Figure (cartoon, one colour):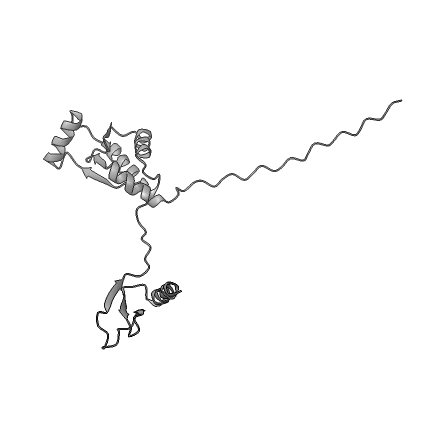
Length: 185
């Protein structure tokens, strides 16, 4: 029962704490009971411990799937001001909320050397997902590579917008049941 009342005391103290950082004190009273309080202990108490709590915070951010994909299959986009293909490449990654490292071979000699070593040429865009490389922009191939890596199909794991479902067709009237045949002697 002692453990239960201690847990209840901790729960009550924790419930009374604000969402921000809060202080909690722990000490033993004269009878040897452990006391938890948000108030500082009396001056006669020795060996009091001060605990700090951050409060109840639910972190909203990257989904587990996105984090796992990012860690196992990092995305690198080699692109420059190449026009529509590079613009579409960036747009696709942006629409899916894919975190990526962008490298511009026209602006960086290091990126140029990396791209030359990777592909043997300087054509962009090039997408690298983990160890998989796709030369040129083709939305279907890019989507498939990102799907295989486990990236969510939309930012922050939210569901993509879809067109409204068509209204169900009206139910047709049931066919009339045939009348029973007359009995013939």
